[in-house]
Image 1 (cartoon, rainbow, N blue to C red):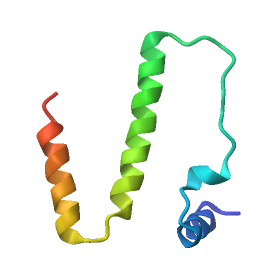
Image 2: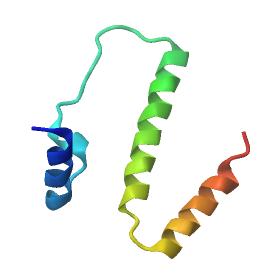
Image 3: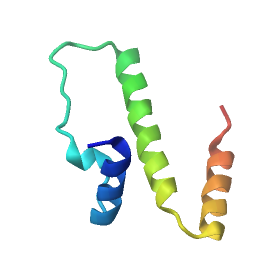
Length: 73
């Protein structure tokens, strides 16, 4: 199944694409920095999914402003 088709199915079923994949677990020990990078990557993915679900322009503008307010780093 193509990625585009999987996205359509996920939307139709109101499920995230990750719903269709088994969780990946590594048996090796990661450094704290590596764990932090993975956590940030996961959080960015989750944030992008949530933003993609916002259908109202005003709500999306509020979300963008919130993110801009947090952008202090």
